[in-house]
Length: 133
Image (cartoon, rainbow, N blue to C red; front, side):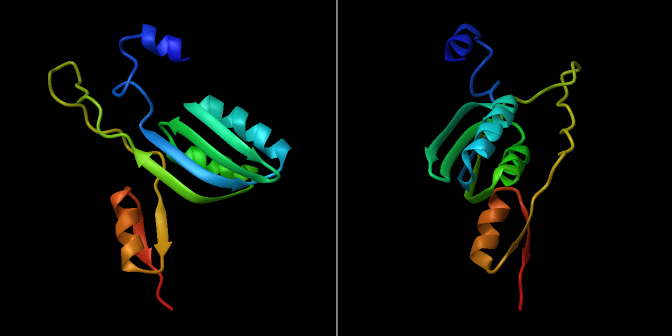
């Protein structure tokens, strides 16, 4: 895939996936094999390493939620980290005006125990709800 990216001048930071998703995963070998196939279809730069039931998962995708959901289907993901690669080129409608932003297909609502975590999740684009006993 790297050779293809180098040959395609349109491929790169502006044409590549929007998010990096990383998490630890508790899962058996069979579930991890299914996860690899699923994530390979979702994005690129896929790395799944580990063994004995504990795996480190890394992938670049446009749909971060789908990458996390694939982990949930495979086992128990935790220490989930999602990084947005930044805004790509402004897309236009052909009239020279910027296109309307695409409506997100997924959203994240995070129930968090404190203001510090709420701030971190909000910076990543999540809607936060403070859990109060």
